Length: 284
Image 1 (spheres, helix red, strand yellow):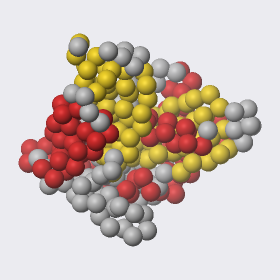
Image 2 (cartoon, one colour; image 1 turned 180 degrees about the vertical axis):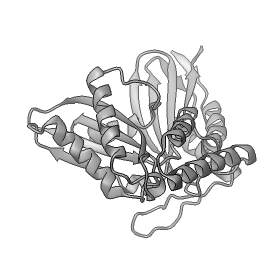
Image 3 (cartoon, rainbow, N blue to C red; image 1 turned 45 degrees about the vertical axis):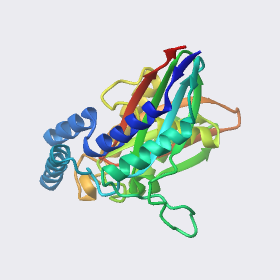
């Protein structure tokens, strides 16, 4: 077995949750620059320019890209040859809590969905665990804002639904979101599995770079067809019109029951904050 020290995990997360709130991912920034060149609306171009200016200020001054510094979501892929010298979940939560405190980031988590008292730590974190082969720990971390999350939907569609029917549903979700999800968006889609699996797939797809082609040709073509139709909606940057409603569409799929066709749509705003950490185990 290989050992990973939880203090190292905590310290890395403390630094990285600040960095991810201050720096726009390279693929997203490049997509916004490309959208600026292709945007046909003067207002839309001005907004995209302001988004890029905001990104530069946030990076240089070490201030948040957005006042909503998000609910932290972690996909933890744990190598089966690993062991830890402490509690992994505690390390993740402690790292997030310290990072948000040291970085003066807004705390957006409440202890109870009814009483709404703030935890003052931006924890607990939402953690999804997956056991994989090997002796590495990978943590994919996102700080997901409430505005775009609130516009996300899931639909248990009939297994006989057509490809066009799936496209129409996803486009309708974006249409209904309007300006509320802070476009230009990244549209995450999960197809298949069951009710909860499709939602997990949709969220997980938002960690993928938007400048890479889906390895499944069928899904790659579907992504492009959806993106084209979404950008024909005319919602535009910040909902003020234009042909840049979305920067990209990412789809993940999974086998499902013969009677089911779950389709989940998880929207992300243009401040698509995510980062990955990799830890290697040490021999004992």
